[in-house]
Every structure is written in structure tokens, then in C-alpha cells.
Length: 222
Length: 114
Image 1: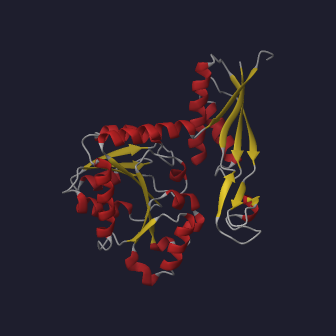
Image 2: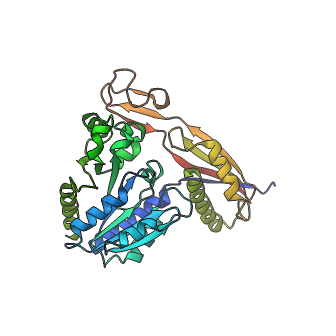
Image 3: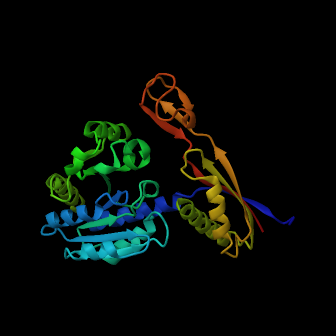
């Protein structure tokens, strides 16, 4: 083994993903498409929130949804019922989507065929935060039963999100959920985060969320 | 699960490096991991063994992990302190206006190959 040589690599493993992410963002800019990366824990109401969001915006914009799941097409079927284009991305056992997988998904949706593309990321608050998907903006859903201290437990996720939706506000009376504390903890991690309380089941707060999205979609079209 | 994901990334990068340098066999891989990179070294080693053995180039390659310390900077009192011991709150002045200086790295440092 005396011909073994040591090769200095000095490469961050996030480097190639970051390059892919920048490439995707450039393509999105060129075609005037807004891509939202939506993250959350399992069971926070992501699919229900998405259905409400689609209802609110589908007459104004062409929407496409990418459902990332480890292995199933339950969510894609639910979204397809709303009449928008929905595709399923299987991560094949992985806990997050990377930029290259997202780029393939966007291509399948047709980058010029949608104004607003939504990536429903894998339900997980750790891994998706570490990998830039190339999205224009990041949003996450925190639901009331999960507790107001989530921002303390998953700091990275909260620090990279442009919007935090606090879902299931209709059940606040039944949980020890302190909305003021929750806001304080989120802003501690990310002073620029926009916080929107919603109830996907009743539709409360969806107007404000849809308005924010419309502004972003219009901005991307310029 | 996350460990397996990053191992796949390492393998992709090394496959590329293997092609660039006409390598036949990689014998060892040295990674540099920040203390708060969010990866558990023992799980990473397990994931590496499983995944590397499925490649011709990296089969049986040893994974060496070097840990890089995490340091946080306090904007209030301009001090630096150990992130793992004290977390987000500055132990010197109690401020929460702090940010991570280093410790979230995940680097492939070097490889030994033929």
C-alpha cells in the first residue's frame, strides 16, 4: 500500500447542494415562477392548509404542487382532488428533499406552466432545514398541540423560515399554548419571521396568508 | 435517517473526485464535523459502512471523524464562548443576541487512495 496517496479535498458536503439550489432559483427567476417550500412536523395540518391555500388562489394563478413523501401517494391524491396539478416525489427513505430532487420535480410540473409551485416537504423539523431546496421562500406550519416551545427545540427550522403559520388555533382553549410566548420564541430565532395564526379547518387567517402569497407571486412575475 | 442522507452526499462527492483523479480504491476518508452540525458520529459511521460497501470504489474504506469545536459570539458584550456548554444565552452577560461563529461544518477533509 506504499503507493497510497493522500488527496486533500476540503469540500463542504453542502456545497454541491447549494450550487444546485442557486441554479434552480435562477431558473425560477427567469421564468417568473414562485416556489414555496412548506415544512412542518407530521400531523400539523399541512395538506389541509394546502387545500385551503389552493382554493383561495387557484382562480388567480396556475398552481402546481409537489408532494414529498418517503413512500406513498396519499397526499398527492388529496391535492389532485382540488383540480391543480400534483405530483409525488419519493425521497426513497431519505428524511428531506435536496435541491436536485426539487429541480427535477419543478421540471416535471413544467416551470413555464405554473406561476406558483409548492413543495410540500417531508414532515420533519430537522433535516429539511439543513438542505436548501432552491425555493424562493420558506414557510413552516406549527400546530397548537405541538406546544409553544417548538421554536426553542428546533432553532434552525425557525431561523430559515420567512413565514410561520400557527395552525389549529381553534383548539387553543384545550391546550397549554401561550401565543405570546410562542411569538417571542419565534422572533428570538428569527426577528424577520412573519407570524400568521390560522385554522385550516375553519379557514380563519387564510386570507392573510393568501395575501402574503399573492404579493410574493406578483413579485416573482416582475 | 439524516445521517444516511449526508453519507449519500459524501459518496456522490467522492465518486466525482475518484473520476477526476482516476482512483481505483479509496482506503480512508477523513471528515471534519462541527460539534453542532446535527450529525451523530456513531450513526454516521454505521450509515457509512452500509452505504460505502455498496460501491466498488469505497468498499471497506475507513471513516475517520475529526470534531471541530462550536463557538458562539455575543454581540452585546463582544465575547466568545463554548456553544455546547452554554447554548444561545451568553454566560458572560446573559444576552440572547448571539450567533454561531463556527461549529456547524461538515467537510470532507482528505482521502487516502490508490
